[in-house]
Amino acid sequence: MLNLLGMPPVASTHGAEIDNLIVLVHWLMLVLFVGWGAFFVYVLARFRKGANPRADYTGAKGKFAKSIEIAVVVVEAVLLLFYAIPAWATRVSQFPSASDNSVVQVRVIAEQFAWNIHYAGPDGKFGRTDGKLVSSDNPIGLDKKDPDAKDDITEINQLTLPVNRPILVHLTSKDVIHSFGLYEMRVKQDAIPGLDIPVWFIPNVTTDEMRAQLNKPDFNYEITCSQLCGLGHFRMRGFVNILTDAAYQKFMADEAKDQHPAAAAPGAN
Image (cartoon, rainbow, N blue to C red; front, side, top):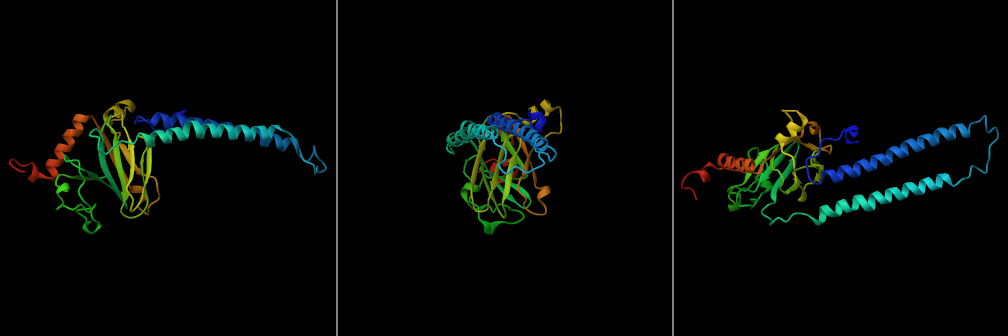
């Protein structure tokens, strides 16, 4: 069914539950489409002018249509109460704690038309940011004098994460409303100026594994903006690289050396 819907392959632990709900909703929509289409054709034939030369002001009566409408309401209530709400409640109740060392936290700051990525670094603390410090060389306004910012790592349009670990993304925007979409992860959340909006997921398929699964050596997970945000909306495209935990640790160490060479130098405090 998912192939018929054109859905991308799932790459997160909660994705299968989302897909199951999508399939059920589409089955309901298919039944409604076929059912009401058939009913429309029946009405055209049953109440054609040739069969009803004179108007009947009493109108047709019957319990069938009402029964169908009640059945549709019941099915929709079941989907809402037993699938949609429990899925939402699970996501809310199992929200990862920021104090959990296994949780990878990252800030994503949207702007026209790019995704700014901010990692806390080895100390696990995000440095202070200030809009007055924003510049072409410092797009998130990171206060380099803040002690917590001494090992922070920043990237543009490149989000690197480890597999099989909870990912807690803090979303915000510098200008207008954007929408952070990771289709394979079944994640979509608005990024709104002035708000810190958390969203979490657990990726369970690395980029290399997905390339092998799809037989596409050049495949990359993408960050899409799902909210029209200006004339350059079409080019607001980022990439996500899901690595093994060892490869992720190496990535972070390499980036720390590249972005903070003085701190990584021998004898540095």
